[in-house]
Image 1: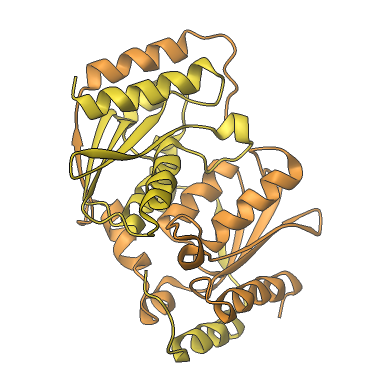
Image 2: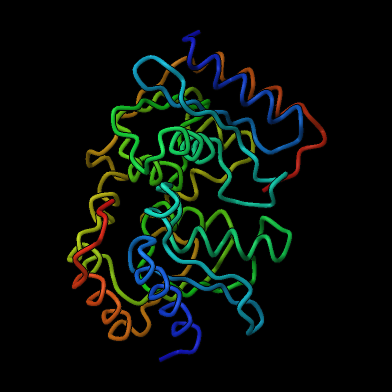
Length: 151
Length: 151
């Protein structure tokens, strides 16, 4: 097994053996070194955002003191859900290696497959526009500032 | 303006006036009461996952001591990006009210629109399968446990 994926599996084991959440571990690699680790902690933290990839991204960003992980690779025991893929995109990670696929994850009871459908208008949460004009005012105030840091 | 959206705008103002990140604020409402608040803190926290919706979800989950926000509504100054929509789905939030739309967000320099395309195979990060068999072992170990908490 690839040495970085082995470490991601180790993270996943740690998580499930301690009852932290699902069997999902992740590491982030820069220039051949692991700079971030994480595993699913949804149950133990009572926080639905604590997926392995999110935990590892936060760990790597803390290590680099940066919101950008450009030039990094991510290794994860399972194909990222839409939330994690979104986080990966925001972090600027260009390459992701995953072990199990979405079908495998569905088979052990997780909703990733449904959520990909939901993101393409296939049910899930209902979205409605409200008070757009009022919200555009705060967008305009932001756009007029000269000290914004782009991310 | 809707009173909950007004509070989301207040959160967004707080964020941009303090240089925390983009003009994105969010509140979560249960039974008519605001139980979670958040605004974008990507820049100040050096953390690409700190969007307004994620911050508000974490705040509401901490208040309820639960990873589920079933029965809650979310109000946000802008249409959620894929990461936040994923988090909303995991949290079980059924109704989302947003102010500005993805096109508005694109106009002030954010990449949400590109990221929705990326989630549908339109570029962005490259994904590759690696060591699926080894990772399936940890899935099997998880599936065989009797004390898993479903989320």
